[in-house]
Length: 136
Image (tube, rainbow, N blue to C red; front, side, top):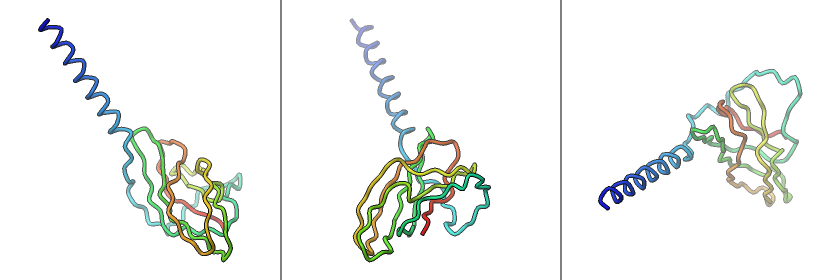
């Protein structure tokens, strides 16, 4: 009976530690900040750009976890006086390998001249996000 209790407690402790370790690896951390005014000159032979829009990037913070999941908390400003709907193909991330990627699908309504902060999810990658941008 005593061995059974010890074995059960040991199993529970191991499962608890494994779950805690997985949770820690899932947790997002803020990536080291890169000056948002830097210009990178990666080739863009396929002419990949975000869709033209009235949205401007005010600022952003990139986040990732040990699995390479990438998210960006971004503040966007609708420069138009009219209402606009932000869709994910209107913003793009530049990864450190030169790859350009739009976030997973997102639609958010903005009033004229409104500024909002959103959290966008991008592809997992071993390369960090260097820049997030729109095109006017």
